[in-house]
Image (cartoon, rainbow, N blue to C red; front, top):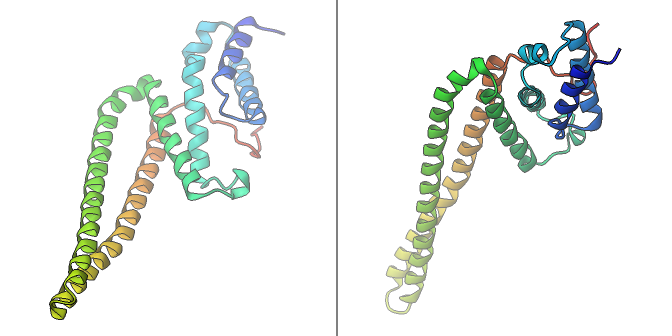
Length: 220
């Protein structure tokens, strides 16, 4: 039997699930339609009181889905053939979805208002110091190259001076090229920690229903 309140809620809910594939959308819509019917939620107010608005529910569903995909390291996306940049982009998107979902959760919003600015401040400071360090490294690269050219320019005047300046320049460049991979590795490590934290935060503070996943068997 058709119910206009249920159909209206599900139709609006589907609009906000455009980031999922058609198959994934159908799995999610079927799950929540059955949940609403089983819970005997016959009016719009009853559905919203139980699940939240369609937009808020969609945010939780997308965040939950994104967290699960991130935990699996996107093995089921493009047959696992993803570049590091694509994984970085998807994890960044997951963080954004978790933040949006937290903003839509009445129970989590108070914690999120306090916690998220602190996290963003910490991330901002980290990025600032990384950029500052990269700037200093770039300047030292210029200094190293300049030192080498200075040494070469006096080669006919003082060979020992040339050896000194060229050697000093090579040492500076060597230190730079040694530090750059370390900084990149530290940035990747820090981002992975942030990703893990937001996975945990999303799972702890988002109290939405379980999101059906592609290829996942539905419980009877």
